[in-house]
Length: 295
Image 1 (cartoon, rainbow, N blue to C red):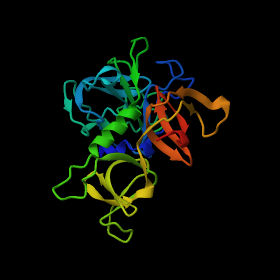
Image 2: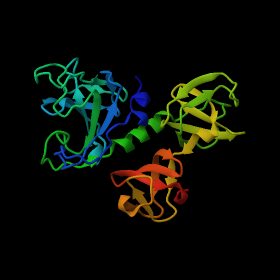
Image 3: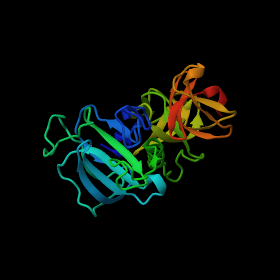
């Protein structure tokens, strides 16, 4: 499975910084992002290239494979948790972006610690628990002083960069490129018509690069495919607040669901849409904002 397919927003299950009574590294907070695979114990592609600096088996998360990406601060160490012991990389191995990190543990939870597919006591089905931290052991050890980064933000940046089209001479990609979000399953056509040949289907929530908009169709690039998509099925990815704006835990204006206030002029990354509401992340917290105050 390709990197954009594996990390698509539609696969995100338990989100970064979610509340939970069982979390102890940072008390009551989920320090990573869980990515589901529909129950399949498949290979995991590296979100960012780096050097394998530690492979460790833990009681709570099974095998953890840690890459030093060289990125600054809390994005430096990427910990891939709930991994299988099958074909593990060696410490010192270089793994390119999109290259195989390892395979997800298949479980079940009742396996002994010594089993290759022991998934960890906190496992609740086949998935990747991805943690970005400033400390090599920040994903599984308390008291390290580690700081943590939101994997969701980096995933969005990576997928947008990978989708960046490289136009050939005379191609349709002449306008400045803009990252947009697929609002639903998005078909890419060879021409500016729904009756044109379908080149591929882009999953809902995928970030794509776009350029020219002509007669209701937008030119897009997705992996090796380039073609035209219906403009109304795409949403501008980056928006700026036009006023101080409440970030809410749900899509209502009730006072009790206000998480925090986002200052005017803040650029936000849109993760999803629902009517007049937009899902976004600010200061490590994810919630909903009103589209009325975004431009």
